[in-house]
Length: 279
Image 1 (tube, rainbow, N blue to C red):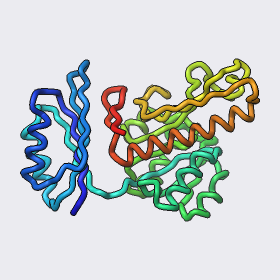
Image 2 (cartoon, rainbow, N blue to C red):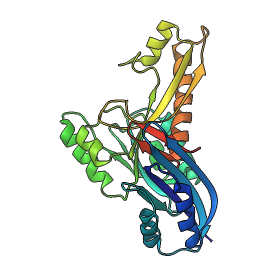
Image 3 (cartoon, rainbow, N blue to C red):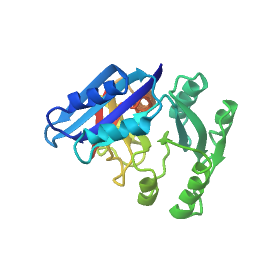
């Protein structure tokens, strides 16, 4: 038996679930799990359906589903094939190491094809785990040239997603457009209160009691793309700057890995500047 994930988003109307399940049954697909959500404000319907069965003609199945859905419906049929990812880094290792260790033991849910860094700092660690590392310096280059070199590397691989694992360069609108909905970023949740350099020191100096992290898709608006997942942790007066940083890195790792797991399992829909996440 093969596994198939069906993702549908469309305008909401009466009878959608009946129409969808009837089409799946006619193609001899057994529904193992089905989740749905209606965005009442925007009159939009979302569903994720896990199916099993012996199927070959996914094109015909997609056509039949679209025939039974409202106009402007989006249907994605996804087989068990793992996602392929590239990771962009600067100097910080904590998010990269978490991803590469899971990749090494085949628990990431995706395959890391390469790591691209604008410093050499993380090359040895990356290559010890058998992953190609590409160094692209940003120094003495304009953004267009820098990003062109990165694109040249990415184009060598069949990449589904780009993961910014503490990559500290702001990407241009053109670069983001080329990979719309496919770039995942992690940042501390002090934004916009603690922007700029040394956010954890700023947090320490303000005596914050909660720190956190946010994983989101990258858009033209810096750190304002659709949020995938967020977490926080409590701190107190016993935390110095180093302890703040350590706690922040732990939650950044947790949030990024959770977001990637949700994406790789096809559980995230982007709806405008929000997401619908079926956990």
